[in-house]
Length: 513
Image 1 (cartoon, one colour):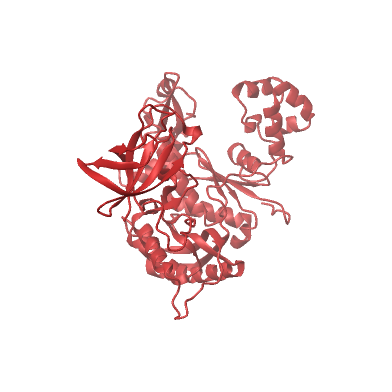
Image 2: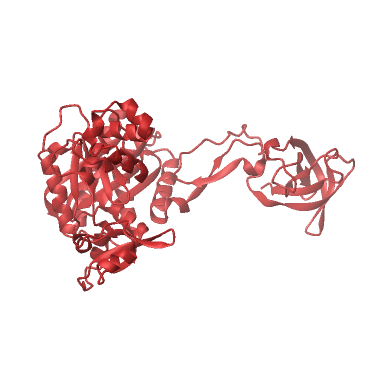
């Protein structure tokens, strides 16, 4: 296996030819095996066809795409079950998580493969041969058979691993099926005497595109390395990533968490150099059997406080339904800062205490970790003059936005809490467009002592539609701040002007404290 030139990108394609069968066998490891060949079926155009087989069925000549009736005629003892695409995809995702130990750039190649961008990573295991050998060894322990191939483009690596041998990176001997065109185009190529990628490579690209379509020309350029497309990794590379490998697996989760705590300190130093703080962190504990549990936390504001981050990670572990199982031990731990934001030096009060909102932020972080970020919410200002739309509920750990500042010691112009929906009231006014003189609520009449207003709010024209209930827009509103003779204060509005509606209704939208 040749090593790449400095500066070139390298990709590793992994292909699991018997993934459904291996997943089923691992899930039912304690169940007896009847020794029969097995096929996984899907229904296509009203007929059952084979989608995947196990090694025994493959050895008997059964391949995907074969009609199930024909397969049973050839192999009467053939066992079958429906293909579970969801379970296979979940298992492939779990394998991808295990491959995160080699590179953060891991992409799913559904339904039965992975593609890794291993640029600059293979030297950690003695080169590409060592990297491929380590992957095969770990997957073999798990009970997975795998093929691996390296190339300078993801398409070439994928073609080599599925249509070629494990050795060599020359795509020219590969069959034209490696282009993965539709069956009609592949048949047309073979009828034209073009059997291998090399047969196509020596012909003018324009002629191939004109005769067999642009898809064939594009696929050929990607295999030959004349054109490339980046992979779509499961997770974007984090801005800060630190990890620690152990010479021997450690069997205690507590020891792994201690190592994570040290990594948090390293990440905090890197964040401080950048003038940033982390908003989301992920600790991954890589077990030597390939499983990699991942602990994710978020904070309500940027932080690079190691004690806070470690405390939240422990809170996250305490909230797990199932405790962490070290299995045969952890041989690597990693901490990633998933999202960071600018963070200046903390401001302390004269007495040495931090700002008063620090305790509230810490409480929000702990609740979000224990209960789930989607279960702890707060209100965030929203740019709308419609009162009930002037704020929205968001996750409490979402980035904060400042609320409009109050004007000195003036009383609030709007109540802190709104009624939803607004409550209909009966109003008596001296003139149709004037303020209320009396209003009736819950059967009791209130005499108006003082009224301020109106505060006129026009409807959002882009939301105008018929059949609105009050509070959903459509008509102009005139708001009044009302104080009755007992000193109670109300926020009332007339829903509609007399030019818009024959008899506008009145509603109570909130109560002042």
